[in-house]
Amino acid sequence: MLKDITIGQFFPGESILHRLDARFKIIITAIFIAMLFSADSVIGLVPGILFTALCYALSKIPFRLMLKSLKPIIPIILFTSVLNIFFLDGVVLFRLGFIKITYDGIEFTIIMMIRIATLIAGTSLLTYTTSPISLTDAVESLLSPFKKLKFPVHELSMMMSIALRFIPTLIEETDKIMSAQKARGADMESGGLLHRAKALVPILIPLFVSAFSRAMELALAMECRCYQGGEGRTRLKELHSRGSDYLAICVSLLFLNAAILTDLLL
Image 1 (cartoon, rainbow, N blue to C red):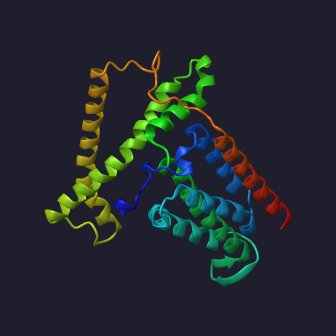
Image 2: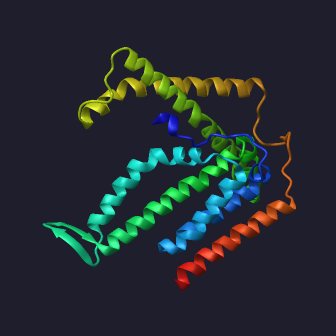
Image 3: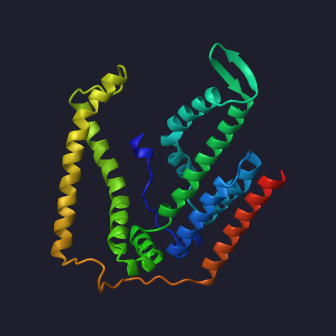
């Protein structure tokens, strides 16, 4: 399961999406989120689904990777779906004691499942097609107006970049610790919920120790390289917008309008 978590991973490539300005990709991601949450029906979600499919086709990211990113959230989707089906009021289709299944509950559950799955699949493309350094520079550039209010823009961007880089590292470290514990005879898959929770303790402690150790090493490496924050700092690669970036924004806005109109008219 841990190997299926692809959050924060970057897959190098030369596709159209890879070449887009990182700042525009962040804005397009925000438009995409608005596209999904502006729809209140399954039909209204169709433009968001088509937009996601188009982006994956242009990015040349394998379809199996999209399915891999959805696998870890399946238990969460199923759990929330059960709650919505049985506890939302509306036209009752089935009743057994205090348990009831309503038409509104089923409809809302279907919408929610499609929305969450599409949201995870679509937003994952931001990190799939953008390097952490470019993403840091883009966030800092977009938040640069707040520098006049003495907001620590560079520090915030740096923390986001480090957090994204550490996610795959910590996942790999957790997998190694779990394999080591299983090799020593630890049983983490059988027993009840309480037994499995106790079995996580031998994993969490070395994981925290390893995380703090890596953080100290990173801080020492930054200090040795005379890192002093963003004041007067230059970049190896400057961000430059092109015509394709503005075209991508226009296309995403068209899909947003299509989602709103579809939801209103149908």
